[in-house]
Image (cartoon, rainbow, N blue to C red; front, side):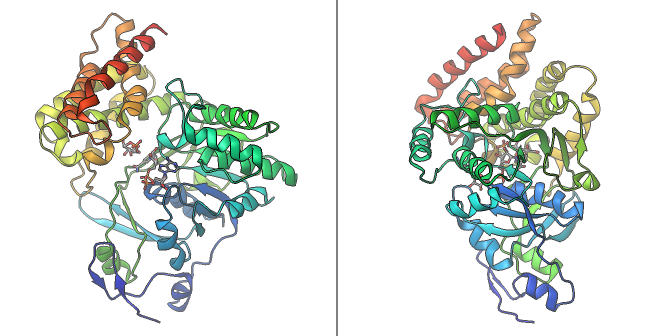
Length: 436
Ligand SMILES: NC(=O)c1ccc[n+]([C@@H]2O[C@H](COP(=O)([O-])OP(=O)(O)OC[C@H]3O[C@@H](n4cnc5c(N)ncnc54)[C@H](O)[C@@H]3O)[C@@H](O)[C@H]2O)c1
Ligand SMILES: O=P(O)(O)OC[C@@H](O)[C@@H](O)[C@H](O)[C@H](O)CO
C-alpha cells in the first residue's frame, strides 16, 4: 500500500496513506463506487454528514454525483479520494468514525454540461440541494427575486442557451435537459433551512423558466425537514489516528440526526428509512419545530453569546444569562409551534445537543445571512404572540441583541453603520407578519 503522506488542512504533516477506493480495496476493505442515481448541488459539510450519510446507510447502492457550490475546492479534495470521506460523530465523551462511500463522483460547480447530462440520464431519480438560504435568490416574500442581477443574468443565459450560474438556473436547465431526453419526472429535495422550501423552489423554477421563455417542466418537489448540527471543522490528525487514512474531506458532526420527508419520488429513491428517515403526510409541524426552536434558538444564543464574549454554542448555553434568554424565547416559540409537536421533550433534547462540549459550533458561523434568518426564525414568533395580545418579549430581545451586536461589529454581514436601518426594515416586516 502506498504511503505518500501529505499536508493536512491544519498545516501539519500526516504520514497516513491518502484515502481512495483503490487503497481501500488493496487493504482488503473495498468500498466500490455505487452507480450515480442522485445529483447533488452544493456539496459542503452538511451534505456529507446528512444526505450522503443516509444514502450510504440505506445500503441499496445509490451513488451521488456531488457538485460544489461557489468554490471548487471541495471537488479538488474529494476527487483524489474517489468521493470517499470520513464522518466523525463527536459525542460528549468520544468519537465514532466511519468512511462513507455514497459520493461516487465529485465535480466542480462549473462543470454544467456534465450536470445537465446527469440530470437527463434515465438512471437519475433524485436531485438534492444544500446551497444555503441565500443561494436560492428569493426575496422577502419568498418568491424568486428577479431584480437580483444574478437571476437576471440567468434569465438571459437560459434564453441564449448558455450555461446558467445560479443553482436555481442550473436546476431549470437540468430539468429541461431531462424533459428533452424524455427521461420522465424525478424528485427534487431541497435540504436548506427555509420554511416551505419545496413549494418556493417549485415556484422559483416555474418563474425562471417562464421568464426565459421555456415551457414548464414536470418534477416532484419533496418537502423536508433536515437536522444534524454540523459545524465547519475537520480533524485530519484525529481521523488519521482513528482510521489509518489521510482524509482531506473528513467532516465532524453530532451523533444526533433527523430527516423527515413528505412527497412523491416518481423515479424511485434510496431506502433512506433504513437509516432512520421518516416519511410523513404533513411536514409543517416538523419544519416549524425545527426552524423555530433549534435554528431560532441558535440565533438567540449567537447574538446574546457574542455580546457576552462567548465563541461557541456550548459556551453560550452554559451561561445562565444566555440560557435565560433562550428559555424565554423558547416559551414563545413553543406556543407558535402549537400543541401536538411534543416541544417539551424536543427542548430538553436540544439543550443536551447544544451543551455537547466537544462540538465546536462557532457563534460566528451561525451569525451569517442574519436578516434573512431573523425573518424566518424569529418574526413568526413575534407575529403569533402579538396576535394573541402578548408582548413577545423573548423574541423581541433576539432582534434587539442582533442590532446591538451588529452595531458593535460582531455580526459580520451587517456593517455597524447600517445596523439601525436594517433593524427598522425588520420591524416593518414584523408588522406585516403580525397583520397577516
Ligand atoms: N451545517 C449544518 O449543521 C446544517 C444543518 C441543517 C441544514 N443545513 C443547511 O445546509 C446549508 C449548508 O450548510 P453546510 O454546513 O454544508 O455549509 P458549507 O459552507 O459547508 O456548504 C455550503 C455549500 O453551499 C454553496 N453555496 C453557498 N452559497 C451559495 C450561493 N450563493 N450560490 C450557490 N452555492 C452556494 C457552497 O459553495 C457549498 O457548496 C445551510 O445553509 C443550511 O441551510 C446545514
Ligand atoms: O445552517 P444555517 O446557517 O441555516 O443555520 C445555522 C445553524 O442553526 C444550523 O446549521 C443548525 O446547526 C442546523 O440546522 C442543525 O440541524
